Amino acid sequence: MNYLTLNLRPVIKLTHNQFQKIASANPNLKLELTANGELIIMPPTGGNTGRRNADLTYQLRAWNRQTQLGEVFDSSTVFQLPNGAERSPDAAWISSERWNALTLEEQDTFPPLCPDFVIELRSKTDSLNTLQKKMQEYIDNGCRLGWLMNYQQQQVEIYRAGQAKEILQSPQTLSGKEVLPNFVLDLQFIWR
Image (cartoon, rainbow, N blue to C red; front, side, top):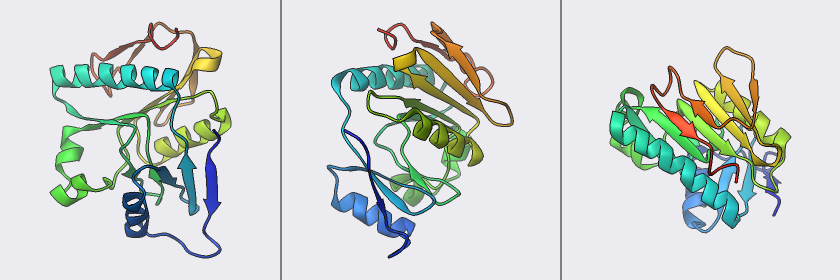
């Protein structure tokens, strides 16, 4: 269940429209495109990863329903990052101001922006190093807060714009602080 990476750069540099057409023509595949032109084909998740991811998205969505500060996205949403990568975090949030600045067409396709907040949940077969690079890519492209959930080591890596990465061992909750005011993620169902 490892990722399959195709290096297309020697032959073609996919444009956003070409990538979107490939993704649309292959709806059963979860695809990403790196800034270096590598097409990544990701396997489906297993039951425990899917369960954990659903809980993360549920909690974020419940908070956003209360606050109505933005929009929440699940793992099937691809974002067009400023560096040219097309990435799909496990959960994401964008402020209303930034989301509403997009045209309806931009909202209907792969939104051309980096989310304000992302969560990546490491599955059993994910490379930690690859996910750490992906988290840094989000931060480098404008993400304000990111959480990398490493179930295998019971750790959370916290990424913030302009700050060093912070690692927490088996936290029971996480706070969204200034990016997600009053959002507290309960990790009880993530660590089991």
